[in-house]
Figure 1 (cartoon, protein in one colour):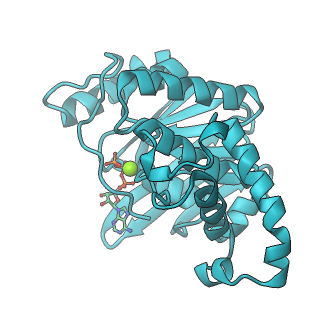
Figure 2: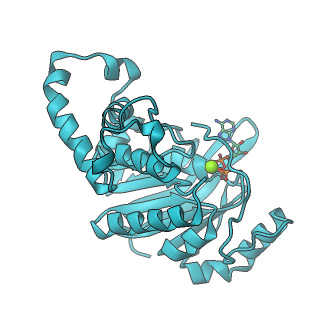
Figure 3: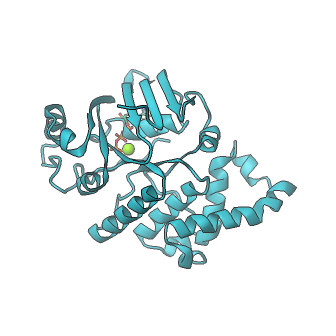
Length: 275
Ligand SMILES: Nc1ncnc2c1ncn2[C@@H]1O[C@H](COP(=O)(O)OP(=O)(O)OP(=O)(O)O)[C@@H](O)[C@H]1O
Ligand SMILES: [Mg+2]
């Protein structure tokens, strides 16, 4: 496997006595869609929290575009070209879509909330630029016509698109999506898959965590499977769905069905993000 846009080696983090992620070697190739799957509590969101600088690993290394980013802070990671969305949608429902995207972007990219809220002269000067950037992001997710609406009035799919627009404001090379289709009906899920394909077609690299196997199997070029914090498989959808360790992990932990590749959700619960 050639060097990826992002490579992790021996990556791990321990919380008390629990190895939430342990000794993971993985590669996210440029220009592709990589899905990270695994049962509830497998360490998928934690893996994203490590890559995006929300957690500092207790072991291992993270390289992005040839640079060691293992110990960078969240805003530094964003500035290198990695952006993310969250498992729990965090949009500003009481604001217009455009204002919410602008503020959300600022809060995520500054060193602290105080920094973000402190409107220095320079920030005010930057406002027009920031507005234009937010409008470009809204255009990429197909929400131009909704820019003036209250974000809370959008559909579930619309709100997820707002979350993606916030992430796109920093013009990332790698976008991490944590359960982008959670709470969506089949039609909305299909629309979202179309958007993800479009973004990758435009040159973006995407890694996503998702329980909906129809989405994973329909979109992913490669799949990384985590179980109890460890990588149990990485390969193409076909390779992974035939892997005995993967089948065992899914059957073993989902007594009520949810075998991979059946087009249904492999899990019925979605816990809150721990970030
Ligand atoms: N900040 C934290 N402190 C303590 N334990 C944590 C923390 N973050 C995550 N964990 C634990 O690490 C494990 C992995 O959690 P994680 O949220 O990464 O799982 P997941 O694969 O995203 O699950 P789900 O599919 O339910 O979203 C869980 O046992 C969780 O309770
Ligand atoms: Mg999660």
